[in-house]
Amino acid sequence: MKQKHIRHKLRFEGHELYKLETFDVLKVPYYASNISAGFPSLADDYLDERINLNEFLVKNPADTYMLKVRGNSMEDANIKDGAILIIDRLLEPENGRIAVCYLENNFTVKTIRKREGRLFLEPANAAYPAIEVTEGMRLQVLGVVTFIIIKAEEQ
Image 1 (cartoon, rainbow, N blue to C red):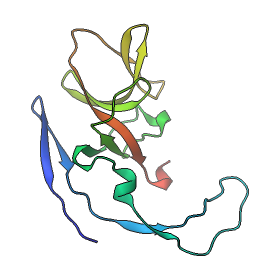
Image 2 (tube, one colour):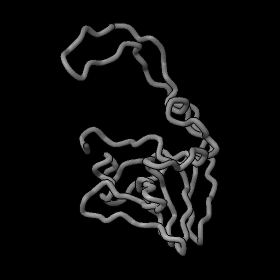
Image 3 (cartoon, rainbow, N blue to C red):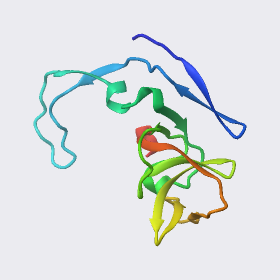
C-alpha cells in the first residue's frame, strides 16, 4: 500500500480544516455475490476482484474531506459521536441532504430543509431544535455528506 498524505488547510473565519488531497490506495477483497440480510443464502467461495475503497468512497478527491463527528444531534441519521464523515464539496446542498455547514462561526452537520420559502438546518435527534437560517445569519455549506463510517460495535 502506497501512502501519500498531502494536507492542505482550508480556512473559514479563523478556523482551519484539513483535507487529504491524495488518499492512501487501499484495495480490499471484493466478492461479486451479495449477502443476504434476511434468510441465509449460499455463498460464493471465490474472490471476484479487489475493490479500491478510494474509488468507491471518493468521487472528487481534490474536493473531498473527512471529518470526525463530536456530539449526538444527528444520531437518528446514524451519525453518531465518533463517526467519520466523507464530505464532497462539489455536490449541491439540496433539500433533504445532510451537509456540513459553517453557521455563525460554528461548524455543524445537519439536514438541509426548505419549507415555505424558509431554510432550516435540522438535527436527527428530537432533543435538539431545528435551526432556522434567517437573512441576517452567515451560512456557508462546506459540502454534502456522501458516506458515514462507523464501527459496527458502535451502531
